[in-house]
Image (cartoon, rainbow, N blue to C red; front, top):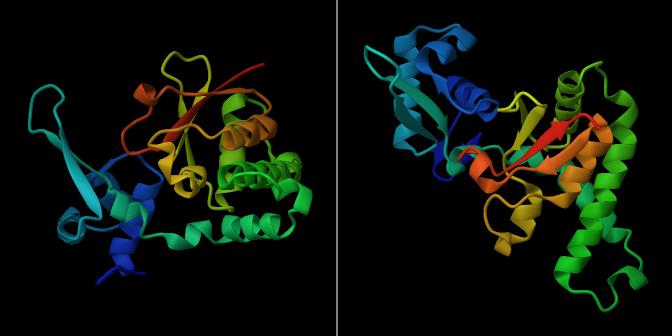
Length: 223
């Protein structure tokens, strides 16, 4: 994997891959996941910090030394361009399939909305029967795993009030295409897709409820 003038491979690529699926991890957690000594992991993290692919935050809890947690920077998240390959192919297919009456008199944003709507509906139809699980959390985990194949990355966590589960997303493609949408804007097409697959009620989280290293978030509760 190469990004800019730096090449990322081997253990450092594995570290970035682990951090893609977690909000933050400590050296000990990374070392255990990789089967390496903590000192070895620290050396790789030093390189990733130098190249601005990860950031470190000190977390104090009780007595003792503060804990250092590592998470991806925007450059680190962008080190995985292939995650959009499949969904990009879908978008191109939907664009090519647009009829003249679907584009006539519409702005670029409006056309993009039609394309995303059609793509979300198609993905929902293809994956709906493959979602498994008896509980809301199990179905959310199953749906998240399935659409990860499309490059749509969501992390499933319990809701803060215990009423359901949260799905937190990184690198929302809607916001990348509609660059002026601003940060942390919920995507109606993602909301529809998640609601269709999980079978619960999905509402967008307020920006204040979304951790800083995620771009969007949704709360899923039983209907």
